[in-house]
Length: 227
Image (cartoon, rainbow, N blue to C red; front, side, top):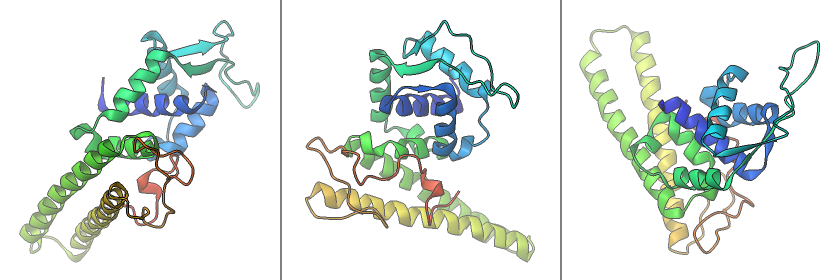
């Protein structure tokens, strides 16, 4: 499975974990959730859905209803509603618990963060700290590159490099604030994510959904977050 298809699988399972949806509604929610997938097409989504059904992770309701793609003329939408099977719920829980290097990468991190409200606190910390470490490594490379090439490029190229450097620096500062918030919550001190109200926590360290970070607004769509 490719990295991008893995991101799509995680996002689909996460959204259907909240409630069953038909394909059209699911596609709209995915377009909001995944900034890097704003050009979603039915040709991209439906093979993923069919694959998840074949693996036993999703169940189709009304599967005998033929799907007619929506057009400006017929206005029809899929009648098939997708919902998680028990195996699909287990698969989503496995993906939530993943805090390895893939979770720190650009494509994966935004989706993991979108479902942080359902993620164990220890996993959240590992993902945040891993992401920060990855970006700090990127900063070092970028600073070294600018220092080496300063005399070789014109002012506009250097300005573009500085812009990229500042974007990564902003994300590192944002991650530092989030990590401090997580540590404060773990020690019982009151703290909230930058610009947000404190998220109520249940006894197992998971958010209860009220006052939580908007799961449909990825980090790169929030103020102060770089693309």
